Length: 559
Image (cartoon, rainbow, N blue to C red; front, side):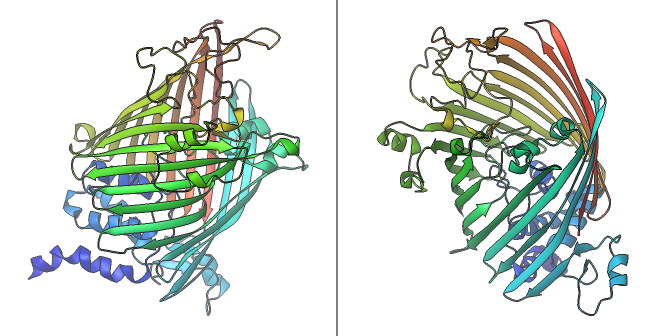
């Protein structure tokens, strides 16, 4: 009898914790994503949809329940991490494990005293059967120190609010905003926080104080029409990534500006389908009349074979110069042929990927990208029209039986002219940021990473990147001499001497980048990130080197 009870305990837990199913998504920077990934590679859980990883909070809870049923297979640190996340996701308002600042009948003295506790913290929270709301204060302070090529520093500080919750157990909502400022060096601030270059207030430079702001918000409807069938529709904006990739992704890296989008998800059995239609903007121009909106449409079909592999095919279109194209709004169509029917004005690509799950503690994955032309000129791989890229990688968890350690290896190659387009407004970019892999065209990268959990609140990571790239050739006056496909904003044509586009042609530059990071959370929601980065840029063509070295400490508070 006792064994039977334990056997069905996970199902019992799911039933009771489903009382308030939180449909709103968990932010992608939450560390539980890393924990779930490691548990997936370890085969504690069989599947997570990490190719489009924005998980609802109830989905995270369900994964934790599954992990909880296999505690004997976990290390001591993994059990502590599990317990930490159970506190956050199993029940929203537990008086013994959570506190909120503005609470009826609670004096401010008690509220202040619990700021430094290990309880879940909210500014305000309310919950009933068909509605709930959770409000958090968000604050960050970053001190950045540039060491090379010169000594300089910057201070970044911001604050904001996050409001989230679920209505009627099916409609999730989220709203957040951050407003911040920078003192000292703008250049140092941009090196340590590249997102500043995606903030209009920062780029505009209209205010005396260098400042920036970011906002997110959406509504999401989720339904289960049948057992194990999931359907969701989401409208709004939030950070998003698409595809596989341990370092960065070929399709949507997540380093891009936040897009506004309409998203449709459907999963049933082995089938998973996603369709997204998003909007963003082009390069910033001081002339307001030259600013424009561009659109990104995306479809993806994936088949997931448990304990074997996941295989997927996806496509995307970038278009501009007109309003929303109804043809790209349908979630069931082949975009490349639709683009032909619309007179071939847009920038389309197609990709295939594969991720294995049949070896415990070892995961392999690969992605192959076809940009624009997808059927011809295979016999001439150096032809400019063969705009292709690929990525292969491996994730090894608990190597050599060392618990709580992970090792990653990944190689990425992107041929010349990938992500570019004959119409510069249709480049695969937003603002001036490539939506896909940040190394850009005519380049490759070897990426390695190791990470170790000392305990449930200290994590160490070390990364190494070796990047080779071929840049376009310019004369001393800044005029283009040779276009080798190294600039996403210069398609084939300007300065191109032939149809040949050899890989790594042009000005050859190599980068060796070392980075170490330490994340410490001594008290729940009081997070310290310490990062050191050292970059050696070697211009092989012109025989000189440049050095960039910096570090920063960031304090994050969520209450």
